[in-house]
Length: 77
Length: 184
View 1 (cartoon, each protein chain N blue to C red):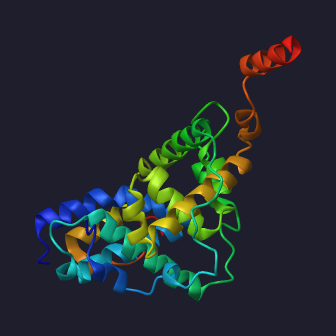
View 2: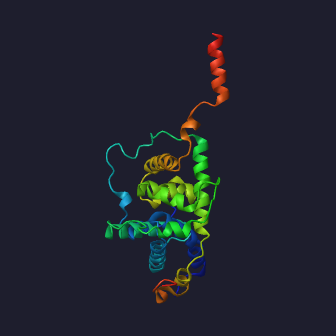
View 3: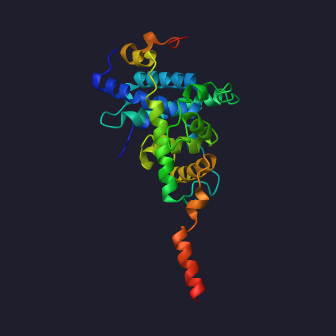
């Protein structure tokens, strides 16, 4: 499935597309035990949820209401 | 501004995740907010290029990531969070298992190579599929899987998770094997 417009990638030049050295990018890395992977997932999601729950600065929301007109100093600056 | 209200709502809904991703990438609240602002403005400027029915969140993540790398090239020598500002702001107390807080995780993530960090965050924290993460990172599926494997291994080390103990046979199995050996 095409998850996003290909145009998004062309809006700037990603570094991720750079050529990889030979042998890189294989999938033969030893896997961690399942329960360690699960624990890491729990920790990462908890960390991420904390960040998502940080109060959003007003100026980010205003951008969507008014576009560039309100681009300027961040709140509290 | 002529943006469709549905698209605007989709963009609005994406902001908390975009911001969390940006903070995790940059280790700086201010840079994260600048990144999100730039990504939203770029998204708005190019909204006609978004294909309705595709994933707005993934589209914005792609833009934000590209903005991040463009900025990184500009200030290649800048030290992440030189004053520990972000760590202080995000030290909100134990989050899991009584031994990890946001600052610990942020510090550990900052030690991962960027390509591994972003891949791990997109899949393990944000919940994108491997395929979606590969598209956002402009790479292939195998590379994303490999980066995530390496990131998990390194992160487990950094967080001092007891991987060795997990790799050992459990005591019951050890006892059983030992008893079998003695019986012979």
